Structures are given as structure tokens and as C-alpha cells.
Length: 244
Image (tube, rainbow, N blue to C red; front, side, top):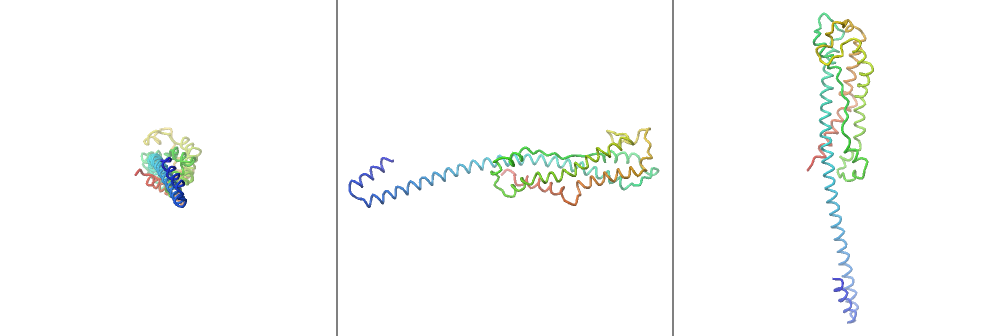
């Protein structure tokens, strides 16, 4: 093809057709430029197609990770809700009247008031996206913002769980072990014959119940809205990363 064009230019010069030669040369340059632009466009299209495929794979992995994270959060919500229900039952019984209280019910709610959960979602894919060039593959601006804010949203929520866990382990659990049977069943926390049930009427017991109540309430009903925020963030990431 190149030799063909060279032959045409040579013939035009030999025939003295200078003006036609220059017109032809300009036309040839235009054709070359158009060819280059087309080649660049094809290359850009291929590059974009490859990046789109990479983004789809990345979003699929992100979607799967957050579906599992939502399942774990649902488990946390279930545990916190059950705990709050039991500790609210105990709070509403204060101060205790041992003559009128059903010890089986007290034992049941004392048992479930000791449940706690610290939410630790998987962060492998989202960390890989945040800390590498793959972040640029995410084309949705809202999803990019959610990915960037995830660590802060998670930390804000986990702070209340961690505070509740530490308070339970450092203060409430020792109190339970001192005055009750630290049971593996809701039926026998108060059933041991060696237990002096008079502790249920003490200010220390009242404060323990109230302390636990406020800790659990702070997790799922706090005024800052961290509980609602993490639920909304997870649901939105799942929605925006859903495979097409």
C-alpha cells in the first residue's frame, strides 16, 4: 500500500503536476491522520471494555462481601434486640420485690441480658479497593463516596459495642459471678442453693441493671444515629454494587 502511494507521488512529480502533487500529499496526510484516530479510538474502546469487565468483577466481589456483612449485622441486631428486651424487663422490675417475683422469669432475663456481640465485618475487598489503583475503576460517584466513608461509619458504630463489651467484662460480669451462678442455661442462674437472693434488692444490683440497659440502648437507639447509618450504608452499597 505504501509503495502504491509512493508510485502515485513519483508519477505526479515526473509529469510536473506540482499542484496536484501537493493536493494529493495533503489528502494522503489526512487519510493517515484519520487512520491514526481510528486506531486510537479502537484502542480506547478496547481499554474501556477491559476496564468495564474489571469493574464488573470488582463490584461482584464487593457485593458478595457486603451481603455477608449484612447477614452478620442482622445477627448482631437480633442479639442486641433480645438483650435489650431482657434488660428492659429487669429494669421495669426495679426495685425488686422477691415475694412477688417469679425466679424462673428473672433467671431467664438475667441470662439473656448477658448476651453481647461485637460486629466485625469482612473488609478484604473494600480495603483492596480503597488502597489500590482499582478504586479508579469504580465509576459510580455515590458508591465511591460510600467506600471512602465506610471505615468511619463502621468505627462510629463499633465504638458503642466496644464500650458495652468492655463495661460488661470489667464490671458487670464480675458482679454476676460474685452473686449468681454464671450459667450456660437461662434456667439456673438463680437456682443454686448457695445463692443469697437478697442481692436482688441491693442498690448495686439496680445499678448493674441500669448500666447494662443504657449500654445496650446506646448501641441501637443512640441519638447520633450510628446504628441507622451503618444499616443504610450497607444496604446502599449492596444496591449499587448489584451485578447487572
